Length: 269
Image (cartoon, rainbow, N blue to C red; front, side, top):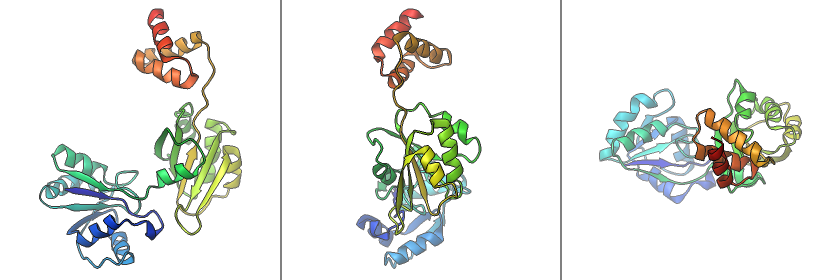
């Protein structure tokens, strides 16, 4: 089978017993960086010397098929440098290939920068969306595309771009939108800065050090009349959305009844 193993995102004490046992018993490890995998095993006191195969963004597509076939007959442990493989890290193409080939895929759960930052942010955790790395270009447009999203949003960002990213976020979401910058999670200098996007943009204007997760509050429901809501529904439908989906989306944004919106929009059509 294919075994996706979550590794510590900073603190080695977060390595699970299952992870250590898997590293000790592995015959083959597909790792984002084989040097990092070796360092991890040494740090955890693992003396196993498995076969190491590099699996990263530049070679995953060409190696996925052969590794998936190999996993049909023997276990392959999949590691990234930190956290869970496939989540903004290599592994998705391999999993997709293995699933299509009928190869068993399982996971050893563990540390997650996304969930840790979300839990520490002080923002709603009941519903959230992970948006991955903030794009280097077109940040304002990218942020505006999700500005009306009611769920809490989680992004990854590099330390030297966090200041500019926060400025662009303030432009797209509004300066008063609540957010949290979570830095160096589980490490010695862990920091969680909470405030408005304007406040955080000023605080991190000169950048920061370490791994960073940005958490942004979801949009507040917009008060609207049923007529305004129906107009929005019909606009979404004209753009290609199904009536049911459009009604649900507008209901989420406005607090209006989804059934009332659907029935009124159906009548208006």
